[in-house]
Image 1 (cartoon, rainbow, N blue to C red):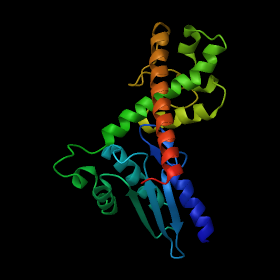
Image 2: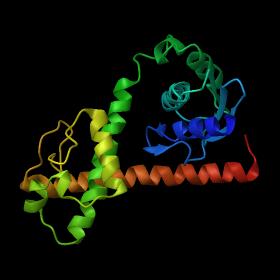
Image 3: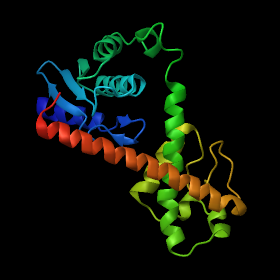
Image 4: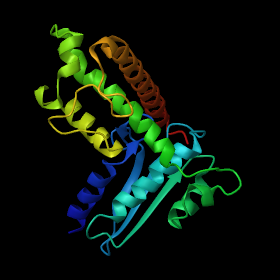
Length: 228
């Protein structure tokens, strides 16, 4: 049972995203250790690329990992900790106590992280529009057609699935009848707005992917040399 439960815990960790990079922490090698005892206690150790990763991003990932692992059937208790970070002690105490970001960083934090999470989800959704629309542009589909296309008219792909997921998380239309191109507020993009909209979407995608590449290279070096 423990082996199967370990796989379930790992799958749960795969649902936890780096909020800025919009990638699973498992794919980014942020999970340093993961074990499950015979009693169902799941112990997870996380490590980020640098000692100075922003505390708000770091807290989100540790808290999300704790919630995801705790929700796995068969897990009786979750222990999720962050190592090698300048705020590890505060983050680990706050997550273990389920205290929230403001209580964890009392006197420093001015708000919980819901707004930050939404901000990055919007960036991910915008970047996703570029990933899904660019192959259509390459096939010669112009602004007029793109402005009228729905998600159901787009060939299935992993990028399309991810775009639907991000929109669902934001409360935006994501079914087959939903417009392919949407503004942040959920409004449809007009044909005249398509070129500028897609340029913005491209910039979001490039920014996210560039940051992801940098983090991967730093993490690869860190793991290779065994540095803290």
